[in-house]
Every structure is written in C-alpha cells, then in structure tokens.
Length: 255
Image (cartoon, rainbow, N blue to C red; front, side, top):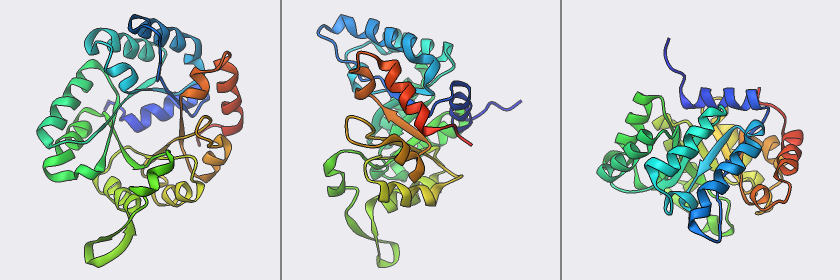
C-alpha cells in the first residue's frame, strides 16, 4: 500500500485529535539547557489536543539536530503528530537540497520554504524530493506581521504584463509546483479568503497570527484556513490547555 502523503497525514491527525492547531513550539528559556526539557514537557501536556508541531529557529539553532530535535520529533510522532520545519528555505538549489535532506533525515514531515527564490536552480530539487518521499512542502504566501504588505502585498507585472499582487503570484507557483500547503496570515481576512477560495481542495492553508498577533481563530476558519499556527498565546499561558480547548471549540473539525 502506498504511503500517505503529508497532506493526508495531517488531515488524519487533525481528525484523530479533534484539532486544527499547529503548535509553534517557539520555546524561550532563561538557560539554553532548559529548552529541550521545556519543549518535551509542553508536548506531553498538549499533544492530545493539537494536530501538528512547527519548529523554527527558537529550537533549531540552539539545539542539536540529530539528538535534541530528533527527540522532539520522535515524541511528536509517538503522539501521532506531524512535524514541520520552519526555516523559510530560500537559497540556491544545492544549498536548499542539502538543508532539506538533513531535515528529512532527522524525521521532519514537512518544510516551509519561500517561493521568492524560484523553481529552476531554486526550490526544484526540494519539490521533487518531497514528492518522492511523501514529505510536505509549504510555501509562504502572505505572512502575519504588519509589514507583510510591503513585500507580499506589492503589485507586480507578471507574464503578459498582467498586474497582480506578489501573494497572488506565489499562489500560482504553489499550484503549479503541486505543494502541500501555503502560509497565509489569519489577521487579514480579505486576503485569507481570496487565497483560500483559489486553492480550496488543492492546497492546505496554514494561518499564523491567531492570538498574540490579533487574529480571531473562528473568523480565520470561516475565511478558509484549514489549520491555525498558534504559539505565544499557548506557550505564554499559565493554562495552555484552556487556550487550546478554547480554540478547538470555536474552530470545529475538518470536513
């Protein structure tokens, strides 16, 4: 039987955990040696109520990839969770391939990349390797910080001198490359809705910006988000489960 791809695996995880939450495990500790223990402790606390875990530079830089990060990935998999590496990969092809190979080898299920670098001599080998290995590739489309409009919201001239926004161009790339998901901020519902309507049924929409950055989880889901990337509002809470359960109550299950 053919192994399920990342998109199918994270949908199954979402249903089995009754959650659309991707926990951004952006742990901050007073001492570097505390990071791993805090990450594992948080995972053990919330793993039954989330769908996936996203790991970025908060842990990827200070921790050892094939020992510490692998422990986090293994624990996530033990709980039936998918794992996403958030490096916003954005380099020439040879470097992208080396970086992604390390991430696949340690056990990550998906990688977030920046489509700005392009396909040929850019992300092409990563896209092909992800397809071959049934791993996931998620592209940035429109980030959740206030100045995202200064880049992703710019108007450009594309093929045929047609005007479009940068994020619209990135969405076309995502569909042409047959990636698994796109990142779209939850705090601009018009853009989120516009993108979700174009990719519905084809590409999963992952929306950061809920909670600490002002995004409303229920409105983001109604606008078309499939998954919500949530970090600080959970990690900084004295009762992270209450935050998670509150989000799960208002966002419902995937169809």
